[in-house]
Length: 199
Image 1 (cartoon, rainbow, N blue to C red):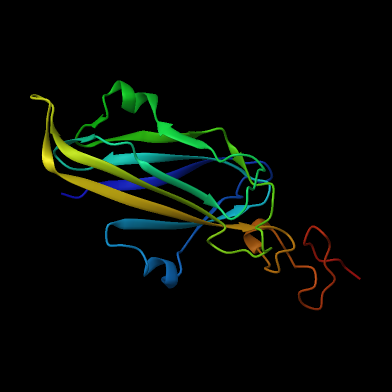
Image 2: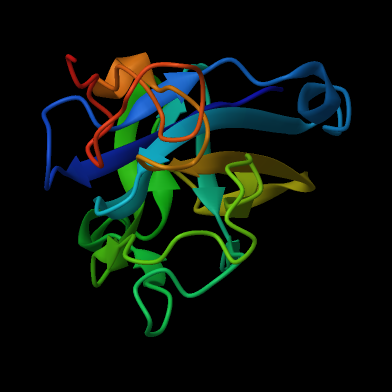
């Protein structure tokens, strides 16, 4: 039996309506993933605020029940907002439903608080996909809603979201964030907001 999960991030945009970007994972990340792990890659913009949560889709003709607390890792290479990482917990819906995901249904099962603002640049001033890593692992078993019995074996699923933090001045021209240039890169005069200065 295979359960399909979707990792979704709710973003409170602080600068622009398209500051959060999903990108293709490079081969060095995809090839390192375990066969039971899904990986996703994103770009985040300095100054952005995120509130990660997870959406679970049970596409099969059998109910399942989560029966352990998910393992969660929130791993920035610096404390971007200069205080503690957000706390992850089960949603009220999941608790009220006794951790049962019925067949052919989809629900938000994990949420976080408080929101997490990216204030600081990576510690080495380098944009890379290990700037921020969010990983979780959930455990579940098939479930008979009539008898209340959970069946063995236990299954688990791991997802990892890699995030690169970008900003004007990171030596990469991020055209998706409307950058036209980077200071000290190329021969054109560039402003502190990464816009070309006409002579």
